Amino acid sequence: MTITIDCRWIDASGVGVYLRECLPFFLNSTHSFILLGNAERLALIVSGKENAVVLDCPVKPFSITELFAFPRGLLKKINSGDLYYSPYFNIPGFIKIPVCTTIHDIIFPDMPELTSRSGLAARMWFYRRAFRHSQKIFTVSEFSKSRIEHYSHNKVPVIVTHSAIQPHLLKTGTKANQTEKSNIILFIGNIKKHKGLSILLDAFFQARKEGLDYRLVIAGSRENFRSKDSDFLFASYSGGEDAVEFTGYLSDNKLTELLGKAALLVQPSLYEGFCLPPLEALVSGTPALISDIPVLKEIYNDFPVVFFRAGDSKDLKEKLQELLNNKKVHAVSLPKHLAEKYTFQKTATSVLSNLN
Image (cartoon, rainbow, N blue to C red; front, side, top):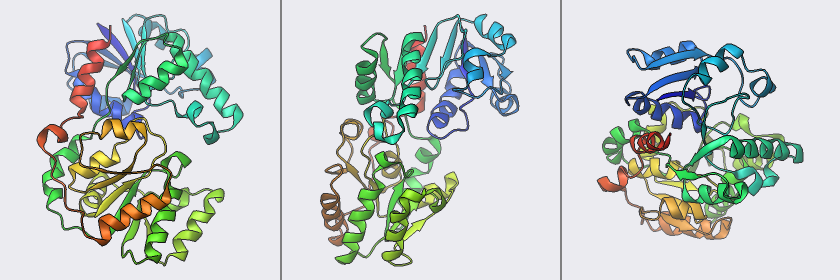
């Protein structure tokens, strides 16, 4: 079977990681592949692979050109194959062969406050288009599957193929477990409302006032804060110059080092499709305190995590104090079956077995 894979997302966060880590396992299969995207970037990936060709494609995903003026030469080659796979929910116009997509979450209709009315309408149009044109939809959790089925009215099969931890973290996990812990509480994520950073900041500063002697390190950049988030910045200064640190961009090696030396990772999310940071922390030997939203209860049910009530800064504060003031947090050592519960080899194998 010849499968075209939309690789224009390869350097994006989230979707890009999923695609990059699955590709080597795809290419090691017996299928033939057409990789659509930046030819120079993709040439490095297909080097030495006789079952893959690259089609250079500068067309932006979710653009008018993608929908109505996709290059005819590319369409001809794509439609000569057997199947088109998109790792996201954008599908070029005039694809005539079967299509499969991966939808990681369906957050915008579930949390419409994250966007404008027009933004929500546009996203719903693309979601519905993916529902209509996809032969199968893959997603990363049972929670996301239930939400996709809700909005698609069960008109397309939805298959769970979990997201997974990047291999470099698994390889360095043993070394990270031996790293001496510091007085750092770690948050990894962006500042969008559903990530719950405001809840963490409120809990953290209240705990600081009551004697918690820890710093909060936010793996991200202060410059990414929008004007309406200026209250967060004010809070960071009011807690003392060294109370909150914004790391800016971190390389994989730097993030791995930080994961290993943090005393605790806090994941205060209000909504996720899967959520990798707690898993990354655990394999690095760092305990995780996470919100009890349904998807995190699903994904981390078997893992040694501590849950707090989602959206409840008081409960989060009390859990922080209980764990850190009483020194009950110890380095985590995951058994092999948990450290390897979510791998991209499993994910890629599951996707390939269902691409038909």
